[in-house]
Amino acid sequence: MRQEQQRQQLCIMRVRLDQKLQNSIEKHTSILVQLQSAYKELRNWKILGKRYIQKDIDDMNNYRMTLINEFVRIRSQCKCLGEIFNSLDDDKK
Image 1 (cartoon, rainbow, N blue to C red):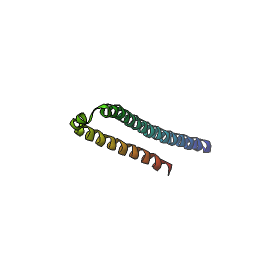
Image 2: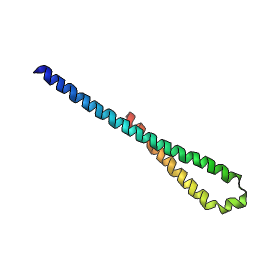
Image 3: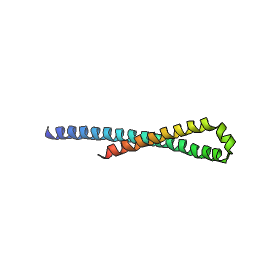
């Protein structure tokens, strides 16, 4: 009877550990997906930025609103990255 209780407790502990591991894997997978998305956005900006830099000043004036939109997008991506890294810091506590 005692051994049966120990086995049940061991099984319960294993299930709980498996659930914790699964939750951790899902959370870190989500973070990786977010980082990949942010990386793609920033890489796209690098490509777009080179295109804009190669334009002359008159063309830049025509594209000013587009540049502002790109900077807003980059700022939101950086904020997203900050939130991701903050969530990682929270995990360490």
